Length: 434
Image: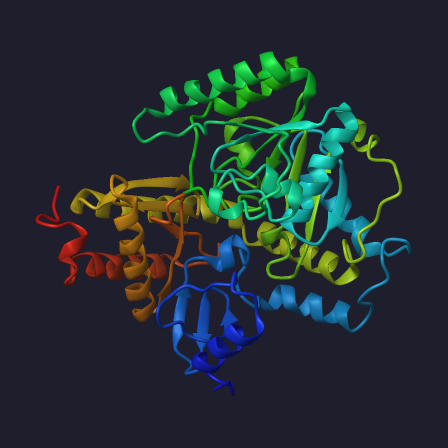
């Protein structure tokens, strides 16, 4: 058993030495001390099946020995030099990414996080188009730097009261009162209006192919094709924020592949490092040439993160994790849909691959958020770590490591059903059945 100070002391130190904006899940949070593949363990060595993967980060599993072995070897060889010196891992990773990225996305700039990656992508768009403004979808999340917060459409994540006013928000292609087709058309109509009025000032539109924190929102299949066609007419670039969706999460290497669209710029982070900090954005040769003034990232593309990322890509390929995500994601989604048919309070199940959301009490989201907190607490007590998201925080988020087993999913679904029926009548008031 790993020595620890315990959850209470950690909470005390957080409250004493950290900013109050740093929050945590659970009324009784465990102290997580170690992880292995799809499992996490607390200070009492209690196992938990992780169905959140650190918010889509550890796609290849916690402390995956095939990856950490390469990381440790590089740590013992060369940790850091900066981009102003020549090292092989960074260029090898850039070459490897060029081979798996869609279309003619060829050139990559490395940094440390998803926020940085999106910031760089937005800058590249401005430099290439010589235009300033952006279009973004309502309820998207793109980062916590000033510019990425400015294109973020979730109110709770727009922390800075002095954000730039150069973002034009349009409705996302999802509205519970409309069909997917109707919601897509509503969004496209708004896009047409903005482009007609402001197209000469707009550099790029940034989107999450599937909104993550916004509640795991999947648009109609034709939506991004029509978006891209409209943008091209006005010399506006399309930036695909694949921070959460990239590297097999949705059953494709990149989520935009589901929609048959190659974006002009694609940003990445999270799963690429499997827990080691890394971020990057990639684009075409022509667009990359516009980002030609001196620039650098002190830790971006360092040897350790680059070697780790290549080990991640090797593991994804060798273990066929993209195909596995598609197969197990369908099993997970089907199981959640079966629960939806049994319980009134489950108002929607949506997602692709191993990125699935289950909305609770969509018609009463504040109460749904309370229910979600109760459910994830009960599931934690049963040995399952479930995430939460959504504009109103009333969506259960299932984004496990792609190495999850079928037996883990079956056990989780069984436990979730027990939670739904076991003494929580307030969730569905009178009748649990539809």
